[in-house]
Figure 1 (tube, helix red, strand yellow):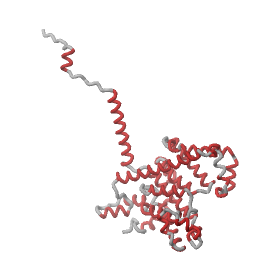
Figure 2 (tube, one colour; figure 1 turned 120 degrees about the vertical axis):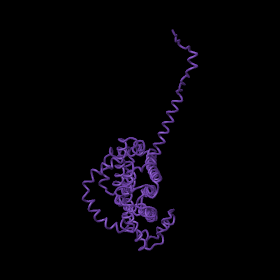
Figure 3 (spheres, rainbow, N blue to C red; figure 1 turned 45 degrees about the vertical axis):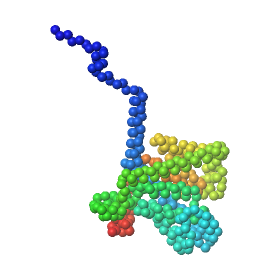
Figure 4 (tube, rainbow, N blue to C red; figure 1 turned 90 degrees about the horizontal axis):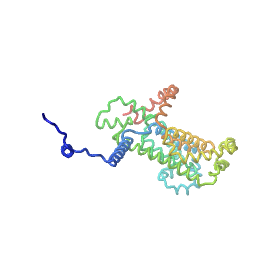
Length: 380
């Protein structure tokens, strides 16, 4: 009879290697490293894999173009005073400007300047409808700066916001929606593009991408982030500045500027607003609160909607009560990047069927004209 004995502990330890015990600190470190790698991967995917806020930037293009066009149209009747025979009083201001674009118009006569002015307005219209946006955008910006910055009395502080925003969105894709460029790309999607120079000409003619997707996506998203940072900085700095003033602390700051004649485009509406002290106080405090906490309110879907609603109401009040419509329109134009794509899609679904007759008529009229313009889809 064979007796099988249990090996002793010393023998078992020699025959079977001990399983190493993982240290808690190493486990925590691994989790932290995994989280860091995951965050870096998400960061890379956000920047490289797709273009963000295409709906919002398309709306920014449209509203910013309307702001430029509005400034030019409302100041058109003053061009002879600023640049014509009666503009000698403006020469010290014109000579002191730091913008090189103003050199384009400093020696123009009244007729030549009027033509330049009309050309800038035409470029603004083309920018709004999204025709050759990458070319028209910089030309419109140069022409608009040449006019507005030649006279300090032509614009307002919205010029600074609009100028910075237009420079930034030149590096982004702003014609993906609601533009002639988008329509041209859709119509050319099924066409053969060929290869070599033929492919390059096809892409240029139909406003298609010329650079690698990862590169254009990165540049687009960097411009988007820079614009968002600029807006957040504007709101926070404005809110911090307001908190230092005793009138803002007392809730009466909005009352006093609205008593100036320059800020009374609709006197009876201004009087109605300032007549109720409670309304003035609540509006004053809400303006400070929204500007101070604009950035953190964007982090949640519900609070973001609240913040954007009150910001739009704030700018609407500035436009109507303080006669600063183009400043307000410029700010609202770039705030559009914070609205989610799902909201724009829902709005398109609701508005689309109702606007179909107007859209059909518009494209029936414009397509034959656009196709025959230089670089049109039928031009060669």
